[in-house]
Structure formats: C-alpha cells, structure tokens
Length: 117
Figure 1: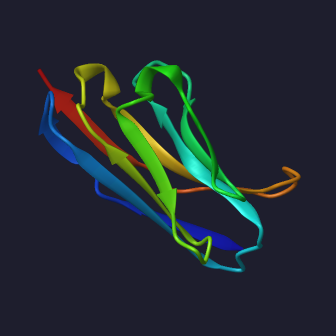
Figure 2: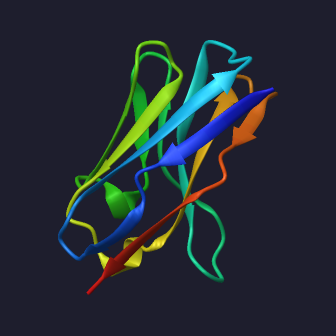
Figure 3: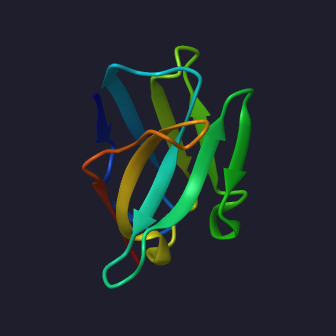
C-alpha cells in the first residue's frame, strides 16, 4: 500500500502564492507519475498538473504560466507552486500517484485551497 499526505493548503488573497506538497510513503513503485487534481463544490475532479518520468509535465490550460509542478529525485514527493492565484482556483486539491501503465492508482485525502477576491 501507498500513503499520500498533502500539505500547504490554506486561505490566501487573489494574486498571492501557495505551495502544495505531497509525500508518498509505503510500498512506492517506480517509475511512477505524480500530480494534482482539484475539485470545487458541485464540480467534477479535474486534472491540474502532472509529472511523468523524464520530467515530462502536463498542465490544465487554466493554470499554465501560473502553476509549476516539480518532483524530488526519489519520485516520492511532488510539489505544486501556485502563483497569481485567482478565486476560481478555490477547490480541494488532491494528490495522485499512479503507475505508468495505470494499473495502480492512489489518492491523498485532499487539502483545501481558498482564494478570496
């Protein structure tokens, strides 16, 4: 089993920054992919940013140029640097770790990010 623990959420004003962290522990398989999804009230859970082996990354169009995803070399921790935050970024942010073939998939408990206008 793999456990994911997120941290770094909070309440900020529009234009400010936050950095989320997610640390994996347990039987971590490598190589893997790690990233972030978010879910606003009444909305589906959407991809925010993901990091794959070889430093390949992908971002939702809504966060490109504002958010940056990074990982440690051990492939056990992922970060999300969020700049120029907007009220529409308000959501619960979930960390996800998955195997490259998609056969294994783990989620964190979520961390709340609230951006006030």
